[in-house]
Length: 401
Ligand code: AMP
Ligand code: MG
Image (cartoon, rainbow, N blue to C red):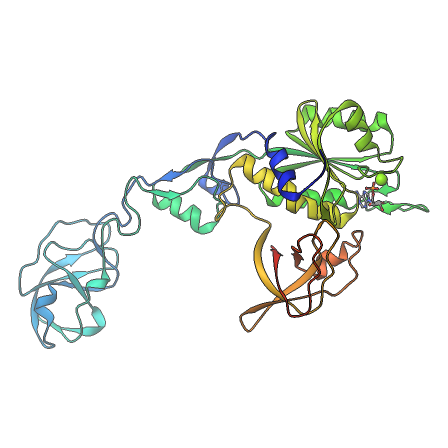
């Protein structure tokens, strides 16, 4: 198909998903990994009724009047579980996290008491909310984390709390990245006339890493069919998916498009978006391939808009808790924005929170070759086709992370 919408591009590519594989990792190695399956708690949290304060476990009805004296019947410490009981007129000394004695329904904090021989005098309130009830956070058998969750420090701590020492996570798919163009030189080398530094493979590799995959940069391939064929064959042998950059437009030397037409299989070519119009998607030797445009802003934007949703669908990222590259927000424009004929227009905007309202400005020219514009801005407009927006207008946008 030629000239698809963003939604159609995602739909078509998701028919050839990346294969989801899993592996087991220890909790220590699980930071920034993505859960492959739901986590079901092996325990109640808390495991038993316990105190959230250092103080005295009491019957609240015994503490209605300040000055009451209660008989001290013992001490409940953490790690030393007792199933003891208090009766009316009694109190048990208790540490934070220690089990509540039977019969006690409240805690008086240490600061609100004084001790007289074997009696404690109650000088402050007895609070039932200082009792942490068994299972009130999570109960045994409950799902504590959903498949597709990106594991961060709190999630990892919760996995430990719920009894897990290792986790089944998504194995990082290998994504080949091939840059195409005679003019490209790896940074760190001298440039001759007409040459430029190759940047896309570095930006794309960073994006690939950010969403839980492993980039395999296969370097720069010159504008020759033979060179491309070799690189694509190597990528299809060694990797789970292929990203190319450059060579997908209309020009005589846009050989990625040509070789995919003649020897691969193209599912769509050209997307109704600006920047990022010319990408293609298809298969090379049964491996899914995205042919991204060469212009650095375009390759970045197409990755965000098309490749990311495809990876997220393939690997089952949780919409709320999974990896993501951007958040959809509404912004108020501080400059007018020009849209594009028949295309969604993704202008670079700078979003800032001004007194609780998200405002957006544009600060540079919007050429798709200008990667600096992605650095000084932090968002993309989502202007519908054929739509210009005026100063003060509220529009949808992506706030890039
Ligand atoms: P192409 O899509 O091959 O027609 O390239 C479009 C523009 O992007 C040209 O100005 C290229 O020089 C530039 N370009 C292509 N590939 C890269 C790359 N990997 N890094 C930086 N610029 C690139
Ligand atoms: Mg080129």
